[in-house]
Amino acid sequence: MLLIAYVALSSVSRAAAKWFWSDEIITVGLVRLPSLSATWGALENSADSQPPPFYVVERLAARLPVNELIAFRIPSILAFCGLILCVFLFIRKSRGSTCALVCATIPLLSVLLYPYAVEARGYSLMAGFAALAMVSYQRADEKAWCVLLGLSLLAATASHYYGVFAAFPFALAEFAVLVKSRRFRAGVWLAVLFSVLPVAIFWRLLQIYKGTYGSHFVGHLSTVEVLRSYGFIWNLGPLPGLLVGAATIFAILIFGLFRRKQSRPSNRDDIPLQEHVLALGFIILPVVIGLALAVLNGGFLYRYTIPAVLGFPLAASYVLSALDRRLGVLFFILLLASLGVQEAGFRRSFWFPTKVGSTEGVERLVKSARHDELPVVISDPNTYLELAYYASPEANRRLVYLADPPSALAYLGSGNGDQCMLSLRPYLAVRVDQFAGFVGTHPEFLIYVDGSDIWGWVQTRMLHDGYALDVVAADHENRVYLVHRKS
Image (tube, rainbow, N blue to C red; front, side, top):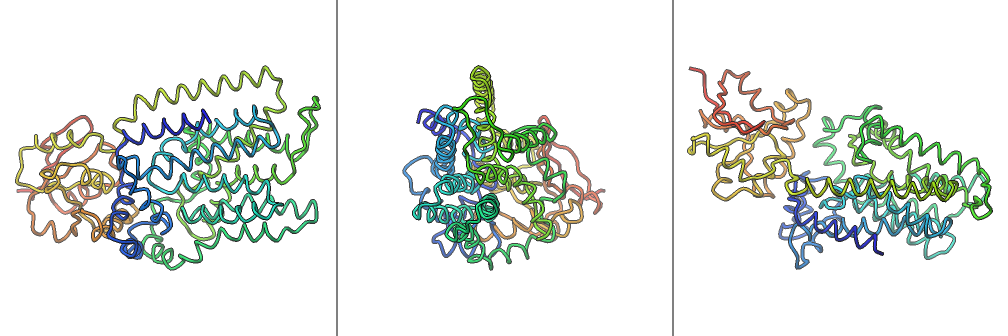
């Protein structure tokens, strides 16, 4: 309970200081539409990819009498706290409270704690419900727990469509039961199938979204990207992350599937085979998702693999139970030291975590360009959404995003960012103009380019079309250009 209280208070404090980033701004904007039917209409227009039930949860959270930065993130914070509790309960049943407590701290080193536990999106909810399903599966011989298993897997997919893949470890584990014990537990298989219901119910929305963005999705699928997801999960580089994943699979195989006997009777390996297979299923989940998306021609982003976090504390419990007590204490000390270093890093960096940083700094930079009469084109859609949300009304009147999906596709390899801005235009307080129309009526304008800009294509297009781009203001890596015809 102390661990959960720490996680909750720490997450709330981070949420209160962390500005919304572009994806969260989309969540907030669609939640604030007049009704759920209006939100549904926005989803039909491909304004976002989150399932409708996620927006029902967020609309309820938005009514809480707290700061909006906290309110919209309360579901994610509660889901992560629930995940910690579920990991503890699952491991305690077979390994005892001490081992369970140590292993329950492991997810705190993952991306689930930060940023996703303090983000108004569905990833933490997806993982939290998968953790609840894990506890339910452990007790699935009882009818009530079997029902809860089905509801948990359904809720995981209802939080994020890719939550449907969280059902794979349970299907794999139940297949092990079928092979080893010759038991066909119809209730469990039915519960696993429940995970598909949100996909079936909202299939039309998915098809609309895929038709809008599917041909040039921003996340490119490759073997390297799938393997790099292990590094992403644990805030490590690609190679260290992959080594952690391989070592964890090795631990499961040695301590689980081969049922190695321990020297001490108290550490006798009496965990059912299906629980070892469940852990293995979560560990290999990024590979499974990658293979599935290769077949389905879907886009791959690292955050889709977040439920894989659950397999690591389960594998760690096998190793800890086999270690000498003194080595176990050393492991716990190292774990706490890692958490301390991580927390210190959070406290130093989370005050201005958005890509924009300080909108006041951007406003000062634009003002220093001394062209107050000209509109300011923001070259990156994420940066534009954040500036449009947080900039002063006076500055916001000058901000504009230019959208032209074919040009973005030609220069960046994906036009989805521009298409998303066009889809959002009817629902958010944003100024999104078509590129050709804007350039035709504005012979001169400013372009603000963020130093970490990876999306901007407008400046390249303007140069290609024979315009001059003169730097009229600069601040570190950020630039303001004056765009005009060459004389």
